[in-house]
Amino acid sequence: MKVIGLDIGTTKICAIVIETASGEVLRTVTGNNDTQFTGSAPFERIQSPALILEKCFSLLEELTGAFSDIACIGITGQMHGILYIDKNGDALSPLYFWQDESGNEPFDENQSYAEYLTEITGYKMAAGFGGTTYFYHSRNGKVPANAAKFCTIHDYFAMKLCGKCEPLVHTSDAASFGLFDLNSLRFDGQAVKKAGLDFSLFPRVTRAFDIVGKYNNQIPVSVAIGDNQASFLGSVCDMDNCLLVNVGTGSQISYLTNKTVTAEGLEIRPCFDDKFICVGSSLCGGRAFALLEDFLRTAANFITGEVCESGYPAIDDYLASSSQPENPLIVSTRFAGTRDNPEERGSINNLGLDNFTPKHLIWGVLGGMVEELQAMYRAAGEQKHTLLIASGNGLRKNKALQKLFAESFGIKLKIPVHSEEAAFGAALFGLTAAGFEESIYTAQKMIKYR
Image (cartoon, rainbow, N blue to C red; front, side, top):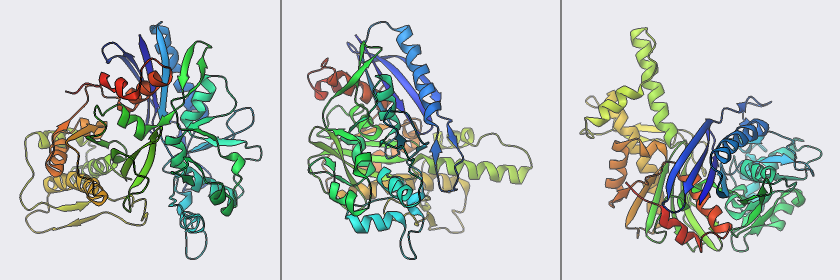
């Protein structure tokens, strides 16, 4: 028996086929999510739903054409972002994805839209949260006239895949919009009313392992789940004792909890049923390393007058043959701010005559990436985990970064054999929803490590 997991990411879209008897990934197909385009305002971050769907259907058709015994399909994707749809289930807007900065625009002389929304509702809201984006749109006449609902891009694809007109949104995604009560696992109608928003646009929510419908009236399709939760489910074999670190475009640290409150700067996110994950998120993550490469490459171009195509080979060769130098630079990689303080910026400290070098900067940036997540974990005050699971290409491909994480957290680090953790987790969720696995815990027995 085989299952498909599909992940609609910010920069790429990936689908995998898993053989359930062994947990082996039989096929992986990937395409670039190059659907971003320029909006009417410089703070907008938008992608084309139509082009994304075209790419998703193409990947799915390739896999279902190659494998005839697909039992079910699981879907995940980038959280927080929203698009508006009409009563027929058709998109009326672009996808305003998680990097959208409309919430940071000034609401008045003293507050941004996100800050004002936080004050009047009591919920911590940030730019990029779907509820914040909707609030900005509602106050500026940007909500489409015929909008019936909003949802994530992966909810939209699951709906279209099954020929439905209304999205069903899992709590893992619904909470990422904000204005969501973790105790009742529902949107807070009173908070929505205080914000002057139309509650009817908020989508229907489920906490369960539900099926949206069937693809081609044959293959069950599970409700889509958030990519952070999907990566957790697809990476961690022992949810009670494992801590997950993911480094991609952004980066996160996640662990399972029953609590609905945590320290400042962290989030509690629904995972499945009445289980949650505590999450600390860096807005830069892997982008910090990309920014470093861009700086070094630009410097090389400036000095030599010749075009350097990529700085990564030289950086990789150096890291493979070196260890952290003495008198290291102390680098904060909060180049894009934080959820709590979007105006915060990165910094370099301990800069002296003997360490103002590219080599020190490389190790300093890696150390900063680790420190930001380590600080969040310390703040949570639950350092009980015995195994560190590493996921995301930004960590999987960087042995120096793996070593820094293991040393900083003081526990053994393992990496899943499969590389597409979110798609794998979506597939496990799909198997559970379709009844092919007794529980998500039994489904996770398919996870193997290097």
